[in-house]
Length: 285
Image (cartoon, rainbow, N blue to C red; front, side, top):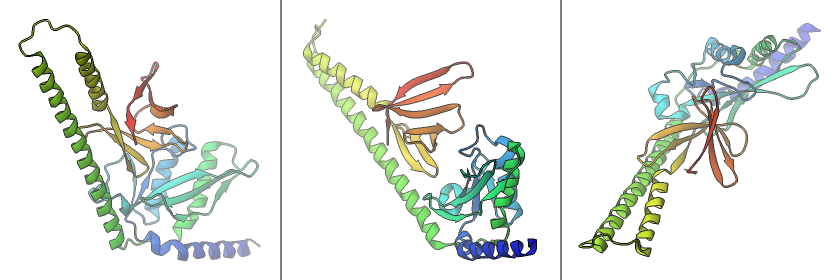
């Protein structure tokens, strides 16, 4: 009976192998998130480190997302797959884990079988379930074969980012020109006057200055793999937002902070180790 089950398992795995093998060979790297959605902290139970270890063990080139990543991947995220390890619901007293490999457009390229464990201790249960799920990938005869279309996708992504940067630079230049125009107008109106009383005109200029400061504080969210990078008007990267799985709710990478939508406003909530500090930010997607 056990021999029969083993044969059935191998047949299923070989079928999955044949279905996904060619597509996986297109990708050079596997990137491991430092925290999965079901975890309460980074690398909880060392599951993320275990995922990286197993991918490397079975012939892939895997990195944790917070490591020094290869330059070719940094310039073209489409060269890598993201390992999305998720907890599968259902099954009384069972821990179930499945591993999806996602491309740079969040499309599933391959999925593992569902690994299961009846262990009551979470650390052991997750460890066993992940190893069971990896039975899918251990039978892949993985070998990286460069795919020209992925290189093209990376070029298109870089081109889009460059266009976005140029657009932001133009907005900044327009703001500077508007500010200069307002200053020159004020200078002409007050030339030769002393102790000019407050007028409707000066009130208007004050409002314009407020609007200018508001524009100066505006942040822009640019799509990247797994979330958004937030830049200011220089443009300079202010923070990176990671998708949390909830609409209008993001995790700030590398900080004990989140960004979420409240009504029509965006709120940054950050814990400094003692207290929670919240403030409204000007964020445009």
